[in-house]
Length: 206
Image (cartoon, rainbow, N blue to C red; front, side, top):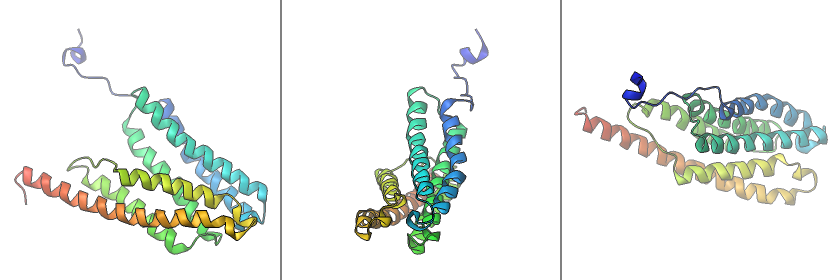
């Protein structure tokens, strides 16, 4: 019997697996998505084909996000690389979408700034507080992710080229995104402060 077996330890998962490959693929898709969306122009006026290519790439990238998570959990292929790269891939894709939509004049810059400050701020904060414990994703955070995805799909689709009234559902969902983003951001900060306080109290530190 090996020492690993006798100690009851489990071998560390290799980073070379399908979920991590899908996560890496999602990161590599970001520059293509940005290129297609920019080349399409305002509501696809420069090239409707490029705009639809951006829609396809974004949809495929978001599907890999769901797929890699499902595979990792079902096959127990959760790795350190996946834990770090997966949220970064998500932030890169959605962040790029918000920025380019604002560059094209289809989304107010203040909306993009509020969302990106929250997204990257919370991501950085998680890395700082991980020494005190793990902050699990909240139901509000999951709702925010779903709303962001729906809102971005509605905005990336060239609906504005048909008529402004088709943009109304997208603006309604985007308004909900801003509200949920701010509320969950504040909630995460409160939880992070409490997590640090409890850790220090439990270890006799002030």
